[in-house]
Image (cartoon, rainbow, N blue to C red; front, side):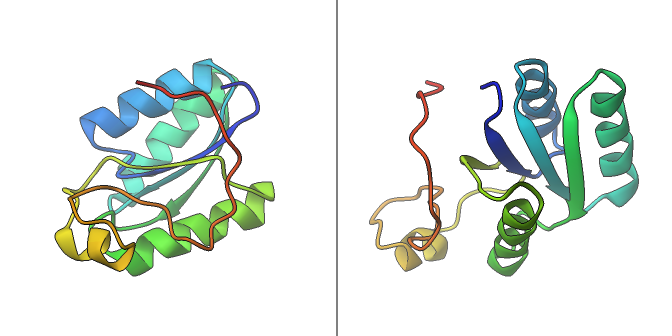
Length: 121
């Protein structure tokens, strides 16, 4: 993950914070988003103290417009985005439907330029 740009929406959830710490330790460049700004600032400071490259923005993982803004901030800050993780809200059928996916799934907007990376599964 060294040098990969990762945006994490819901970064202050248990899964989000754990994932952020892990990816930072592997050299990923992070953009963290969450509704809880004080926890978000603390998490970003912790990661930065450990030598991680991290920025953050207030973002509500349950709102598509907020996630879109997080993606835009990530692209502005780092010039690209390699991976978007929504770890703070349950996927919504409507979001999957907008992306043309028939099942519940987290999906990147079609216009988002991505770079292939190794699967994390």
